[in-house]
Length: 145
Image (cartoon, rainbow, N blue to C red; front, side, top):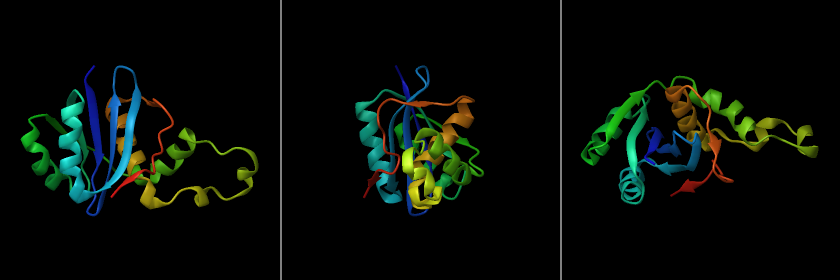
């Protein structure tokens, strides 16, 4: 089944999600330095059947579109307004707090620098108009440096 890549672009880092639309599942979710994005996507395309790439229309979307144009995949620019803000709430939907952790302020569990992959997920969910589940225990805070 063809999969889709969604990217939350940024000047220094990007969030990236690999998902299967027909199964409504996320298979990969990472945060990586922006300069590593092109090679990471190139490698991903050699191992996965990618049908399209959705790029948030934020900070560096034009630059990223130019870098990925050579892949000859459908590149879609999509609205990403407020995705970082919304990612905080989505994080706790995906990873609910339980036990005594409820007594600790929620902000302790996440940092804004770790929300880029969830922002990419929100871009994808907005594009598809439905929510995705996780294929396995994916840590959305995984950094590729």
